Length: 261
Image (cartoon, rainbow, N blue to C red; front, side, top):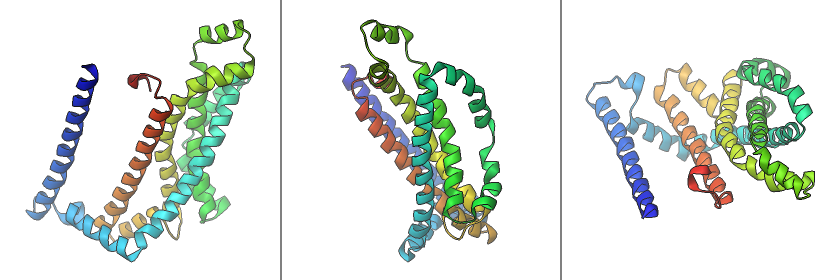
């Protein structure tokens, strides 16, 4: 009965979400067509869809999207790998963690987006600067989440494993690492947006291609439709990655209760 109730609740939520989204789009289009809003400044769903189709057919959108995704995903991949590794090292070694933690938090407080102009000055206007900016936005949140994930492990369980003769490696792989998985995926869901932000900010500063370049060019021409269309496309792509991370997390943690994944 509980399973059936949860299934019904999930269906109701999905239907409500579709209704809210559809209502918003319809009201937006009606307000644009009836003159309640000025399409010069707000555009409309029809204009955005038409612009999307034209850009898609010309290949312009896919080319710019490919550039931005390559920068963002490369930064996400390396930032996640380095962040997870550093977080594990800091979490396992209490002494090193206690020494380094204040510096990590200070680094996290640094507005790394503001480093964009400096990074572009050092690395140029090509791929490297956007990748570096995306990497810098990802690595610290990943490191902090893994660090906290290891520290949140119940010490009673750690002592229990040690009591039965488990080695440090066994404690790590049997307890600490599995305990970190929800933290890692939570960080990944946040970091995919950070990686996109890093790539876009780098393209705003200086670029020859990318979604940020498209938006910046449209802004220079006061083309609101040209600005909103790539933004919406990037939002949908990023949301898709978020859903993929959720699906992978649920598959890896299928043994845990749904409300604890």
